[in-house]
Structures are given as structure tokens and as C-alpha cells.
Amino acid sequence: MRARDKIAAIICVVARAHIVKKPTRRIPTAESKLTYHIKAAPLVKKLKKPEAAKVMYDFYHLNEKRLSSTIVTKRELIIGLLMEGMTAEDAFAKASRAPDEQS
Image (tube, helix red, strand yellow):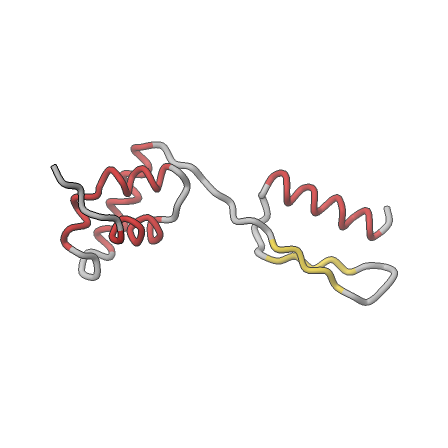
């Protein structure tokens, strides 16, 4: 298998599966001493509601002092964002910027 074919195969695997643990892979070619860099897409893990609630609870208790007191009113929004695959830090940041719900 030629180096160009190896690169094409790796690109297809990365693009299709998004399962690469390292953020960057180096692929040397046989024809030259150049190194190609391929950025891998981050793995997105969607959570179920009980898992998302546990992640939210753990993050809240670890960061309670730096979070605003109104964040507790946005519980369902945070759980929804976590279920979509967002990280806990990003979900809390987005929820804190969201307008308060008026009942």
C-alpha cells in the first residue's frame, strides 16, 4: 500500500467514525520527508437523562462557589445540553448566558 493510499484510508476512517483518541496524527510519506497533520474531530458522547443528571450534579458540587445562584433554575436546560453531547463546562456556561424563564 502506497503512502498516499494510507493517508486516504486514515482520512476516511477519521471522517466516518470520529474515533481517534489523539487530537493530531502524523503520517510520514515514503516519497518525501513531509509530514501531514490530520486534525481529528472530538468524540461526542450523548448521555441518557440519568447520566446527564449525575454529570450535572457532580459538576455543580465541584464548582458551586464560582457558579451563580440562578443556575439552579436552569436544570432542565443543562440536562438537555448534556444529553446532546455538550461538555459540562460548556453546558453550564451556555445556561448561565441564557435568559431567565418567566413563569
